[in-house]
Image (cartoon, rainbow, N blue to C red):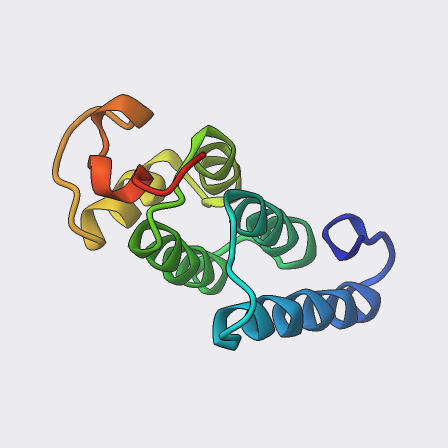
Length: 119
């Protein structure tokens, strides 16, 4: 899968475009619905196929917002977000930017509505 592409940056960029196109198709579809796995795998694609830094953190934040809006935040998505962020500080800041002001980043401490559709 695209989330595990190996090779130079050109190959990784192409693989990321494939993953992004698939993600956008799911988001825009009236027939398809994202799942926790959709978000976790796309987060992994962001991490594996893009260089660390502000641009990657911005992508993660946008996808995290969609995930939380859809109530699909679970431990796998949370772990991919944490691994993908450039630092612990950016990880906490990301949650602050989407409306969480707590100190604990444990799944049980995060808003229940962000997890409301997890099966």
